[in-house]
Image 1 (spheres, rainbow, N blue to C red):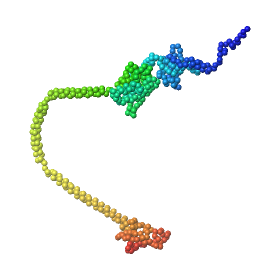
Image 2 (cartoon, rainbow, N blue to C red):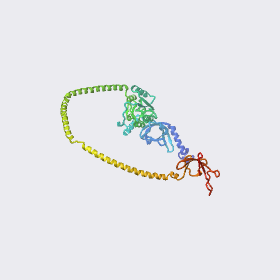
Image 3 (spheres, one colour):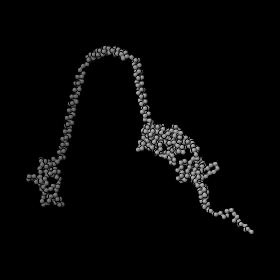
Image 4 (cartoon, one colour):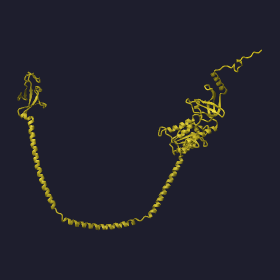
Length: 488
């Protein structure tokens, strides 16, 4: 009889291996990555909010029935030709994997491109409407091109045929200074380089070491919409709109249109045409100058001829010179005759008046006035002499008094009373005996004259020493020069 299985053996999955959460999540991750690997996924971007602070980008790809989370790492995001935008339909290429932290699977995108030309055109139209709403395409903000620029700045690839054709055009039309800012015009990073070149030219100082261009040309040859897409990027459009230097767009062929064509100050159908627009043709300038000179000479001759004709016609209507001066001359002759008669009559009248007045004139009043003035002058002279004599007498008495006072106060009066004045050989007055050294030459002045003496000291007591208290001062002897005498 067969045995009945136990309850534990009858449960589904009773013999299945046991996993931890991490082990199962890792197994699912490996199964997805090994099962799908790299895939191309088409869908609409949803939930895009721009790069995270870390530089990574998170959003979702969806269609009408499903949605898959997506992530673009920082390194891959910088290499993208097209940046994600909300609602853009794209084709993403990347690896399917899971994020164990939230039990979700996702695609790690490494490449991203719009889903066909239709998507690019839709994005282009959306950007066009955005910039138009900001007023970047208005004609009022466009700057006029300079007539004859001294420096032309070109933003293009330095290795293509475009720059060679443009330089050839400059040499043929009007040789000028050309500055080329080399950039990539297609591929990853080309839009940033073009924008940096436009802003770099605008940053140059006027009159600096590197001359600032008078006009800019952004040029590129023809290509597909994808090839020209760098010139539809927002960074390029805004750099062109901010340019203070007039900018000519020459991107693609005549049938190619990009957003930089709409914001530029002028759009040339080809790069070669842009070079023609930038500078005039030298031969055409010379030809136009010759035409202007011919027109100027013709106009001057015409003006001179018209003026000469008008002058001749006007001169016919003018009166003759003799007719103009006939009447004034007749008036002058009449006045001349009247003036002669008037002068003779005036002279006779003044002579008669002078004769009448001269009878009343006489020198006697003048003689009398002169005599009175002479008498008054004599009186004043006598009074002045008397006053001067009195003043002199007063001053003399005053002077005599002061002279007498001077004599009474002077040393001569003292000498007359028997005193003498002693001076040393330098003329300084000797006031004390102890200041005289033996043998010193002295001068003694009396009231009636002056003599020279020599001081003779006392040998017992010495010369110049102070006397003892209560003792009589020593007596000095002086003798006159030549032995004439001595004073004590």
